[in-house]
Image (cartoon, rainbow, N blue to C red; front, side):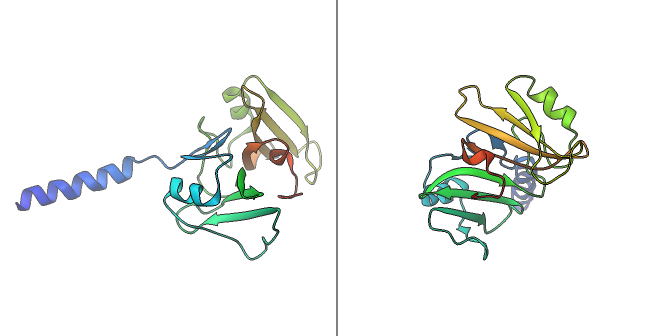
Length: 168
């Protein structure tokens, strides 16, 4: 019985270590998808979402997970998930791109449907937006670049994925 318990604990620890954290897709994050209600996203992520103190707008609201997803924010418009922001942490896209990666990695991972434009606040030539459209053109992943490196990224539907100041 003692050996079984030790093996069970070892297996559980190994399984937890091998579990992949959720990643960003063109239309969602992990099992949460664009178009879901807040309650459905909470069920999909198995955790509650709370509003940060600075996010109080009825038409466009931001929420953050209560545990384990530091730096990931969820934008809801009229009660539906429309965008997921990654502002810090180790969250990555489904192709493995994360904050701190070089812009060249984006170009290699997404060789087509890529648009590079000037950043609204980071001066050229250092500041750029790299927007990659989904194959159906309905969604995108947008990377913010400073000095050739990813400093933030977000995914979701148009036009929200191109908003510069969260809900604006």
